[in-house]
Length: 92
Image (cartoon, rainbow, N blue to C red; front, side, top):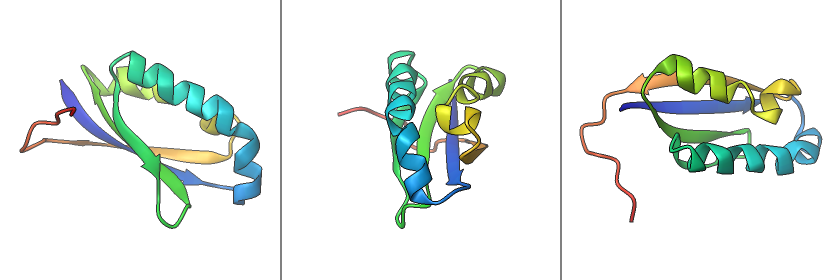
């Protein structure tokens, strides 16, 4: 399994993000249920969000990430960075 950081950066003011939040959170839950998303949350300050993800391939993760309502609606851009975990990602 490969490890990734998905970095979301808002392209519009926060008040234009809020109407898309329910759809985005549904997408996050789907990603978790598919085993793609390990952890996620908003940046501080709230200029976007970060997702820690695992996937067999970058292409699989990119395809799923492109279904995020934030990306589909053009209110956020996304960057994916692969990394080698030196300490395994575990759930408690």
